Image 1 (cartoon, helix red, strand yellow):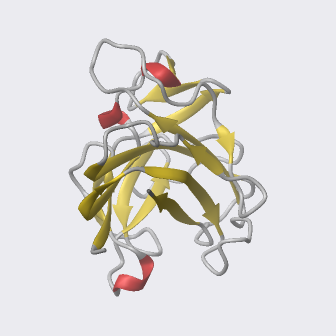
Image 2 (cartoon, one colour; image 1 turned 180 degrees about the horizontal axis):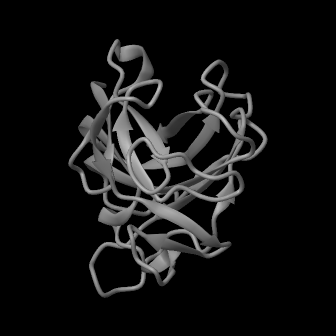
Amino acid sequence: MATTIGWRGGDGVNEILPANSGDNDTLGFFGANFGFSIRVAEYNNTSFVTNDNGTTNHGQVPNLRWFNSSGAYVASELTATELRNIDNAESTLKITLTTDSAIRTQNTSFRAFDRNSINNDPSGVTVYAAEIRKHSVGTYGSGDISWTDIYGSGSTLAMDNRTSETPSGVQNFYVALSVSPESIGEKTNLGFYWETEFL
């Protein structure tokens, strides 16, 4: 079965390319704007597509900043929003699975790792993730109620099974991400890995 997996910002605008593509379009987390540091124990105020060392701006993606176990600041808003009230297009990532025949999915997971082995913890950062599933503005979503602290194989984000949904050749998965440095200095040993099973 022919299959493609595309990664973009949650708004679907800027593409994020896999590390083995030969391109440097990766996801970077920053402070007040592109190139600004995040203070230790604080969270990202902006998110961009950038190169491996965070020096080239390839476009902004929606930003979510951890507020508490069940809420986030959306973009530059000063009031936090419950995770289930965040729209799909406001999520950090939109992962699109495209197949040449209609399928359902199950056992879908998302993890953060050190870019060497998917089982290793990311180095020097705390990463929170949540699945966003809000199909229309003004409704209450069915995604995660709370953030999950993800690290290697020790803690992954389990995403909803779609075994009871209508099979489709195009399926979109939305992920909220917020990161916090554990010490000063650039953090480059952070990657993301997504997997699913077809039915």
